[in-house]
Length: 302
Image (cartoon, rainbow, N blue to C red; front, side, top):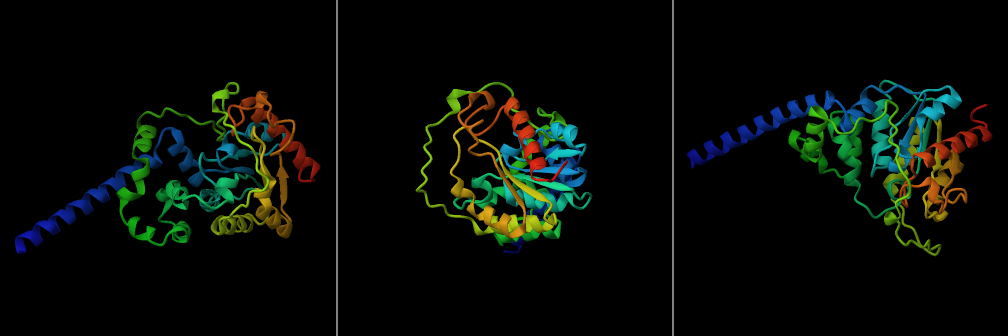
C-alpha cells in the first residue's frame, strides 16, 4: 500500500511539474507571438493605445475600416472585434486594455446572437480570456459564467488547451499577420454558395440572456457612457425586435444607437457582401463612411 501511495504521489508531482513547465512555455509563446490572433490578443490586452476603439464580433472586425475613421476624424482607431465572440469577451478585453489606455469613444457593433440572445453556451466566450485569468476582474467574469471554472483554471494546461496549436503556429511561423489597426477585411465578391434561405419571422418570441445584458450595462459604465452602439448590415436584413433590450438600455443611459441592419442601400445588395452575414472590403469601406456620417449627424463630431 505504501509503495502504491508513493508511486501515486510521484505521479502527481510529475504532473504538477509538467503543468508548471507548460504554463511557463505557453505564456512565453503568447507574449512573444510573431503574428496571428494570439499576437493580436496580446496587443489588444497589453499594449493598445487608441482614441477610438471598435468592438464586437466578426461583423465588427470585417466591417469597419479604422484607417477611414482616422483619416476622417483625425483620431487614432483600432478594430478589436473577434470572430465568434461578443460582449463577454469584449468586456474582459476592455478592462484589460484600460490598464494602459482610456478611449475617447467606443463603437460597439452589436450581434444579437453574441450580445443579447439566450440559447448558446457562454463558456465559449471565455477562451480568449484564459491567458489573463490571473487578473481578479477576469476571475470575476469566469465566476459569473460558471463558478466551477476556478478549479479548472488551477491547471496551466487547461488555460492553454483550446489554443495550443494556434499559439505554436503564431509563435513559430504565423500564417495570418493582422493589419496594424486590427482590421481584417474580406476580399472578393459575394459567394452565393454561402447564402441560405432565411425568412425573417416577425412573430418570433426572443429570449434574452440576462448575463449578456448585464455586461452590456457594465460596459457602458466602464467607459463612462462614451460609447455608440451600431448594427452593421447583413445581406438578409434583420428583425429589429432582437434589439429591444439594448434600445431600452440606450434610452435610459443616453447612449446613441445607430441601426443599419435593414438599410435598403445594403440589404440584398450583392455588391457589398462576401456572404450572407459579412460584408466584403468594398462594403466595409462604404459602411464605415456611412457610420462616420451618422456620428457627425448626431453631433458627436464636427
